[in-house]
Length: 99
Image 1: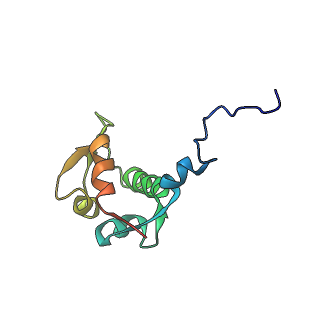
Image 2: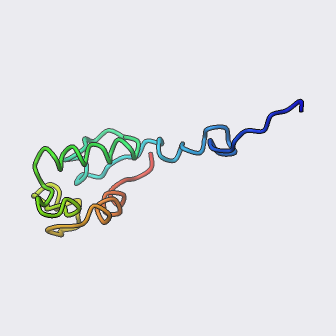
């Protein structure tokens, strides 16, 4: 009983399991119009996109899962007028580059 095994919840790399979410990513021009041009972790990009959606009241009031695009957001949504919140994540990720 000299050693105590870890629970394994933090991953085998001693907490480095979340480094993918925290690595800074650079938004392209379309996304930068919403979140800013500086590199940000994916979690912060998501937070800022949702802040923008709420601030501009772009959620469908009858179905909160549906996001309606304004001019800036439409560029990020590849020209779509509306998407679900699940599609939103995939489309936003397409506008991020490592580094």
